[in-house]
Length: 476
Ligand SMILES: *Cc1c(COP(=O)(O)O)cnc(C)c1O
Image 1 (cartoon, rainbow, N blue to C red):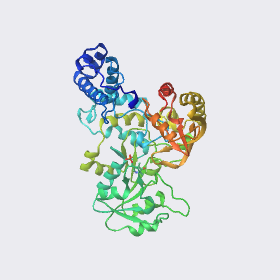
Image 2: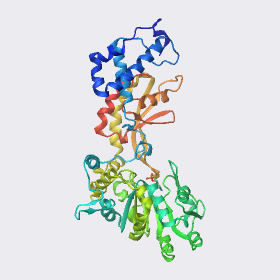
Image 3: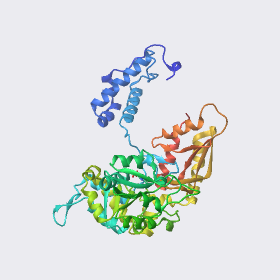
Image 4: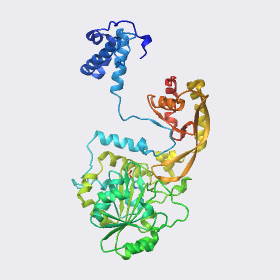
């Protein structure tokens, strides 16, 4: 609010009842209810009054105090107050599996299944064949066995929960041997040493940061060793003079000592990604075939499904895990299972996967598609931004995200926005904020004095919406 457009004396504001009985207000009352509309109107009028009296704290300027103007402000306030806290955004960060933006986007088959599960009673724990109580894990266990080669599987809230439950079940009060090179921290406070403590297990670190040998594991095995564990270095890479013990070497040691071998795969993919032109990531099946007794992995990373954590492996160990009372606390709800099953089912047709599984479709999208999109959008964005900024189409590198293949980047194309001339303040920061303030916020990335919009995750279906709201990009 600026002082110069404020009228010199207190303006005449309309009475509450006059606004409420005005025709323009009726749709608001119908939508938001009389109580909420009245309360919001009273608050708005109080603000306008305070402002007209020159109160420094006032945030509403009563330049126009007509009923129509007040009702328009009221509509705006009500709309803002009733807007969902959780809203769709455009993820143009270039990180496909962005943890802060909800990771994997699900295919329509999963979306439909979730809608059904929300609307109708479901046989979540009910065996339709026998008419008796069932087990919710059974809904997806067969698919998981088929896709991973594991004897059994169970599903919990996320992979952190999977690791916690596994450790608590198999190693409470005992030791777990892990290489010093694999004590990973995942963003959002998941750290192997901490989760180990919370699970009641004792971490027995072996080797050094860059080199761990088979003998290091062997020498650490003692009477109270419960588990050997390997952890995927999801978000970092150790290069140079390095040595890690691979599963085919570690598994015989575990077996000789009759100690289970667990692998936290992190992302964990169910298919060989190389067939789609992506870098290789060890699959769950390969991990089990190489001798892991249990594997844990996320549902919403490379798998492309809902948030969940999957534990797959030896039937006796899975049975023990399912008997742990913590399983009840960490179990998944029906919405998760409703979404997971159709996603897993897509893996039965691996040749069709890049077309059907949203995550894989985005990851395999050719740079030429993004280049064409950038060419279409460049003039529109340049026009919307005016002379203060220059918009160019440029090659860019996307990343998979969520700790999958941190070193590998995918060629993409996007819009590079730079401040056209030396201006005061922070023009890129201002623009970033304006993009975030759009009805469907646009999230980009600022680096090297450039605001980058990677177009990999802007699919044709949302293109119209994206272009349409550029007109709302009014100058700051
Ligand atoms: C991502 C990850 C986790 C945590 O998985 P969430 O599904 O986010 O709970 C645990 N371990 C590794 C190695 C990971 O990459």
